[in-house]
Length: 284
Image 1 (spheres, one colour):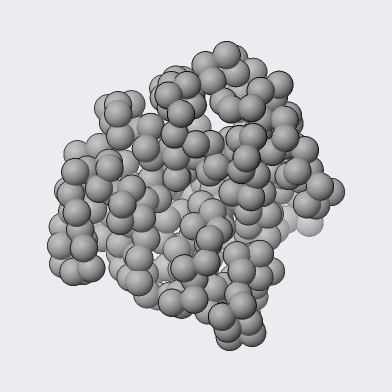
Image 2 (cartoon, helix red, strand yellow; image 1 turned 45 degrees about the vertical axis):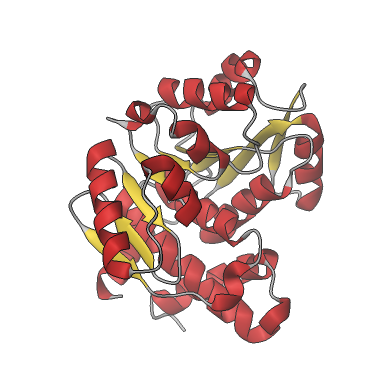
């Protein structure tokens, strides 16, 4: 906790009076498909609640239109397609220009053309990136793309198996060893989600114990990716973004779970992010 609090204080520096829009990041969320719109919306809303200045969501048209209806705070860019494919690459790369970080993967599906788009996109970008959900499945096919880039990968146990070939189970020691080894091999930061989150950049290891068993509800991984994306966009390195994102997401989940119990939803967690940040920084 002490180390994470120190990292959070570096992210949440006191704002200058004459600061302006863009000073605290512009995040690009790449996600969604014809049938899935919730993941990119949750990414974006969590990032805004965590403190990024702007979020642009790029998605296939139906998903983008639904995302736009959530909040007027969201910038939604529709693509003329049902699923991402290499045909969209130039357009999405153009949108990535000027952004300070990317979150990619939520709701994209595992279709072959989607995976091809993801791999070409990751190969082309040079800004910090959270690789989540379906983007992890794609990256598993060409892991070498990650090397030399500021990438944070956020798998659950099955996604880690796909990425590494290792079934980690619930034994913490085995999880720590597997995450550290894979992070070292790929030269990335990995945040393995679970009852205890395991975070490593191949050298350092941090265990995060915030959270609640009620956070099995769909979408809480999307909020985590969004918070981590916010921190990358605000200038944190992937390891720091992972440590702080896991802590804040888990604490927000705890606060939401106390209020809603079995009825808690990922959208409830989003509303508790500012309270979690204040508590983590000792401001309430």
